[in-house]
Amino acid sequence: MTKWLLTWTATFLVLAAAEQPEAPKPVAAPMRPLPWGQLNFMQTTDTHGWLAGHLQEAQYSADWGDYISFAERMREKADGLGVDVLLIDTGDRIEGNGLYDSTTPKGKYLYDIIKEQDIDVLCTGNHELYQLDAADREYEQSVPNFKGNYLASNLDYIKPKTGEQVPMAPRFRKFTTKNQGIRVLAFGFLFDFTGNANNTVVQPVENTIKEKWFQDAIREDVDLFVVIGHVMLDGPEYKAIFKAIRSQKWDTPIQFFGGHSHIRNYVKYDSKSYGVQAGRYMETIGWMSIDGIKGKGKKDYPKELASMSFKRRYIDNNLFGYYYHTGLNETTFTTGHGKNVSKQIHEARKAEDLDELYGCAPKDLWLNRAPYPSNDSLVTWLETEVIPVITVNEDRKDVPRLALTNTGAMRFDVFKGPFTRDTTYILSPFVSKFLYIKDVPYKSAKQVLKIINSGGDFFTFSDHEATRLAPPEQMYIKSAIIAPSVPNHDYIPGAQSPLLSSAPDLIPGYTTKDAAGDDGDDTLHAPITFYPVPNVIQSAIAMPAEGDPETVDLVFIDFIKPWVLVALRFTGQIYSEADVEVYIEETLTDKMVGWIRENWKQDC
Ligand SMILES: *[C@@H]1O[C@H](CO)[C@@H](O)[C@H](O)[C@H]1NC(C)=O
Ligand SMILES: *[C@@H]1O[C@H](CO)[C@@H](O)[C@H](O)[C@H]1NC(C)=O
Ligand SMILES: *[C@@H]1O[C@H](CO)[C@@H](O)[C@H](O)[C@H]1NC(C)=O
Ligand SMILES: *[C@@H]1O[C@H](CO)[C@@H](O)[C@H](O)[C@H]1NC(C)=O
Image (cartoon, rainbow, N blue to C red; front, side, top):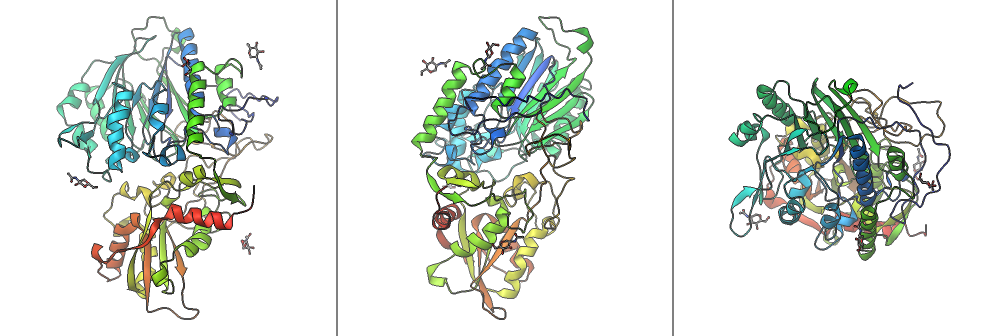
């Protein structure tokens, strides 16, 4: 079924486990080897604080320390082969995990842990820019931590004291690779993001590429352009950059690295330009290898490999795979540096008490792996069990109300078993508050849900601003009323083609189909179906037993306020910001934790 050599290691290794002691042991699985080339890349993106790895999913259980060991071993291997390995990170390193969100200040340990990895080119994501303090930390900590390697091609920072607007980091970087002597010019972009706090300025990519420094840079004589960005591979931003570079250099290879939409993806721009995107949450390490670049290599490169080729692979982040790809084992793999960083992560988690037990989930609840509505749907659970109980304002508790919650407020699945302090931040990292408009005519209020879910046509908000309406994994499903329960195979790389139906005991996971086919994943998995969820869900609370109420309180999560006001206007009701009041002081996350402590009390 596949031309790749599949290696099934039947012996389940008895491992010392991932370096986080509470992580599950990695499990043996059939593997595809990594294609090596003259120049090789490893990419992380959208890690969102998951530096401890996944403590409830064996296939993603390696931590940032293990990734450091992996990178060091792969660089040793590259030195032996006379080739190069470069590391890339395309942003959204923060928000989404207790390791970042639970500390005061946020990211108290995170920046010091991330900086231990030797990353060659990195950039900013939108999440680094929502809050003033996060953008400050990016400028004051991350940029110096990766001095020269951190790039900001279209992003400026405004210094708080002087109001001076300066580049967040250098616009580009030119360097020559160690073994092959390949001359690289790298850029680091952010998509045309508009939701940033007022201490940064994101310049639209269309404008940036007209600037003199960019026009000069793309005229430089180099062997390869590397364009990294917190940018979706098939978005307009990369199309514009590709066109601009090609207008000057018709033949120079260009390697793009994308991010933001949380998927594994691979895109071809032309025969010498490709883009790869490495998923999310430390689940995936992207692998890219290129052959046939005109370098001034110190070492001769085998002639038969000299023709131009690009190959990609998506590495599941676990020790079994790391041993497999390095040819090392439990005793020989881990480096002293990697081990130290794993310890650093463990100590940070301990100091923040991230394993503190809040309750015990009675079963798995899936954000996108179960149909909505259904009993296994996290969204159904939220809509029918949690929101109706927690959405109470004592002064108006008998007033009928409709509560609207954006599904994008939820970020991950809940697994049967311990629900900890850490799980809370994983599930809902945002500071989401409940607002309301009182006494809205019911005939208008009841239409709001449908209008928001019907999407783009009613709104002038860009797709990007809608990022947090629904989970980012489905952000490219455009403005359609999403039919509940219809699996959306076509859109999501990661949901198709039953692989190896005869193979025994494949663990469910990514089965990616991309521009190069269906053999990109390093680990063979049983496929998982992706079910989209609506942008917004509605819980009707304290409604009269019979008939419709005249008016209701329209309660909603603060993030969706702009959509609610537009939708109401569309029904003929003009409300303004002044009509919006706070419904509950506590956040959605705090209220949800209260519900879990109350309802999932049983011991695990
Ligand atoms: C930026 O926003 C903050 C609050 O978010 C506000 O206090 C400050 O005045 C704003 N600064 C400018 C220059 O608009
Ligand atoms: C690991 O590899 C080394 C070197 O090949 C070997 O000596 C050792 O026995 C291996 N250890 C395990 C636990 O397999
Ligand atoms: C690991 O940490 C120890 C103790 O802090 C330090 O002495 C050692 O040099 C570190 N090793 C590496 C390889 O970073
Ligand atoms: C869903 O859960 C409800 C309440 O626990 C139960 O009555 C119903 O049978 C379940 N439905 C399915 C399809 O399992």
